[in-house]
Amino acid sequence: MNIVILDTNCSNLLSVKLSIEKLGYYPIITDDANTILSADKLLIPGVGSSVSIMKQLYKKKLITIIKNLTYPVLGICLGMQLLSSFSEESQGIKMIGIIDSSVLLLNVGKLPLPHTGWNQIVFSKEHPLFIGIKSGEWFYFNHSYAIPVNQYTISESYYGIHFSSVIQKNNFFGVQFHPEKSGLFGSKLLLNFLEM
Image 1 (tube, rainbow, N blue to C red):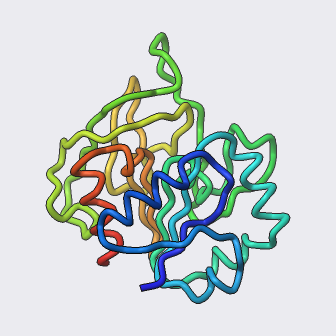
Image 2: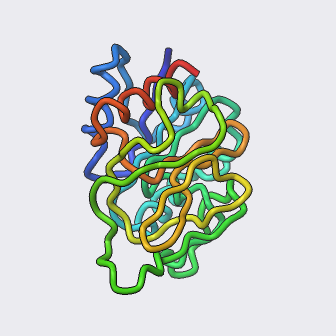
Image 3: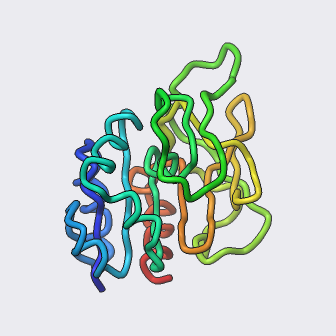
């Protein structure tokens, strides 16, 4: 199986790659359009600023390519937010536009931002991503922005406010947490995605 990790020049590319290799698969990190088009799975990791990553994707002419992919795509943390149509962080730059929703700064009152550490994901329906994972399991988060709960939400979490922790639209999936840092259940979710 050809697995591609999109090269977004962010700090967690190697940790995502190593997590997948531990599952017995061998992904490549690239931003080459032809390699992406011929892949079986694409992962879009993200740490840092949506502005810098989106500028890269526009410069490399990858937006339309990503939007037209028909195989499974998984956005991780900021990578999930990139699937939205707009982000409050993006300074007017359009996101990829798969999910018709905005990304908003977490309005959590006096709670500290970023939301960093372990938190539960809660879902009410069975889903291929959640095989072997119970609702209420804990995953590792590190973010200040999030997609509100909407029609594409398949799991939500709570940190002063409810937000989408897993989304899906057709063959596009997103997780707000870092599965590569979430121990056994993070590995299980990655495996579920790869075997989907």
